Length: 258
Image (cartoon, rainbow, N blue to C red; front, side, top):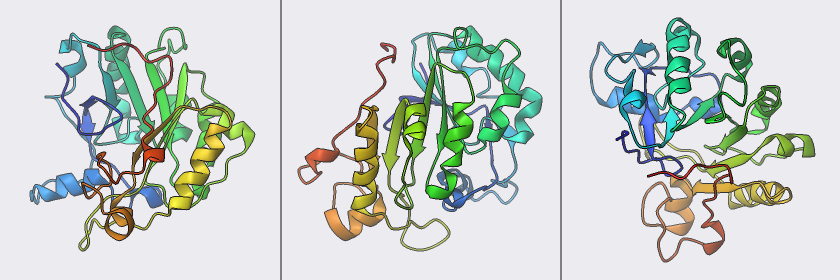
């Protein structure tokens, strides 16, 4: 059985390595740094990438097919993982029963980091995605669109501004995850404001092409200042969770999981 995840758009996570460096605004309060720093180990630097031997081969032992958020504690395409990424691709190739959801903020590295036998028909169980938190990072969608793959997706989380997409950009997106930022009131890992209009505008644009949408959460700011929802992330459904945002769709190609 895969490691159960609290991330609502997946059901398992796989962390063959952990640690990452911040590359854009969406990284400022990254949960990965928060988790590692909370352990209080002075010898553990969350910006250093470390291979996790105890997790490395895990999907080979998970007999029931799962949606697996891949490298949930790092970036699959980060440079420091180059030495063992071929091994990861071999594990992925051997386990088509799983669906691997790979999300990156480094799409410029994807093309050079694909396995030699990469072809959509061999890796149809791999969904390649990018994070786009504001207008400055929309270029990542174009880079993703250059990669031949079965399914391309975008995580608009944490959504930090209104985003305007062209028809070309919308055509590239096969699935979209949307959410506001979660975090603390004070300290190193706070949260930033989100606007309801940002969510609505993005959902309206994606609906024009019937793109499947997974609305994950409103974020901590909207929970504390507007909606006062069940949890601090503004994620769990409750009586005052707006019905229009109870949208958790998946692409039609998704496999049936046990």
